[in-house]
Length: 422
Image 1: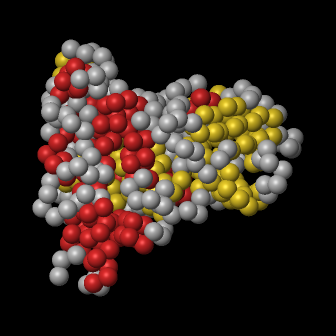
Image 2: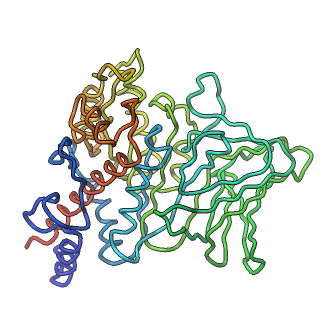
Image 3: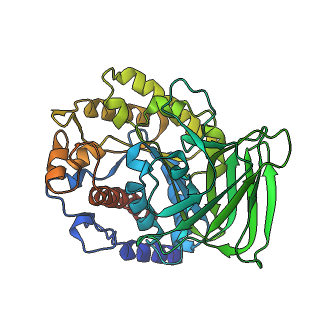
């Protein structure tokens, strides 16, 4: 459909508001889509590649049109990875930038997992406080066949009564409000889970969806703190296993669901039997896979096995959300034992480009954007990478988030520019 003159004016207004002006490279402008000043990085390489076409991305950009041009609808993004994502620093920056790109379309928090209950590092931005004794399983455990979902973790209690409180904190977030919650949990022999509020005027409706594996709570008003109670209510109930929680709202905007497991590889994520089932609950418009750094550090790394594994993960994502756009981000540059450049990064990139051509995915070449082989040493010297030469500092992840955000919006700008052509 050829856009009307009024729509062209709106689209051009959004282009200028976002700093996506015709013919002017993004990094050369003073605009909301700022990119960090990194002389040792290849900022010119920070763009999305579409080796298999961009049909799915046209659909995704259509959702952005409704949100950013009309102020209606929601855009859901699910991001999977290892420790780069569990700490929610890279993904935090992307979430923050997207939710502030246009006033009035913030959205909500989306999926969370209370990592502290699993005795591991929790994103700083939300604070889970719990009672009771809980044991955990994560997808790295080769000998454990426990069912896992999109968090890659589960926590289980056998205590008669336990509780969980989740509140928000940090300078990035002013606090998220929600009016609907889904608690994903084991259904057989499971305790009763109940949501409650400190405000006696808040009314909460409870509904259990046994087929999809969650208990849903509908609030009659928006709240900013989650209170849950897990209680044994029948003799046959043995334990309660929690897989994750979604905090939802009816507001327009972006929901950026970050799902990371320290040390996780493609093999780890394939152990998550409930992956497609739970991802379908989120209904993502875009799935971002940043899995490969741990595969590449395996002494027995095989590009062929890695490609087979990733192919299965992409297939599961598309089964859960048919027609979703898929973005593959290549590995950050890294060293082995701080001394030896990891030469598998280029092989990982080649695999992703082949899979993108096969499945119609986009690729963002993190490895190339950082500066290629040995570039993490320069990031370390600039205070953007840690001494292990694998992980980034918070400032480094923020820089990475800004670069990817700009690439995402530049691709959207190309879509808008195409729509405004006569």
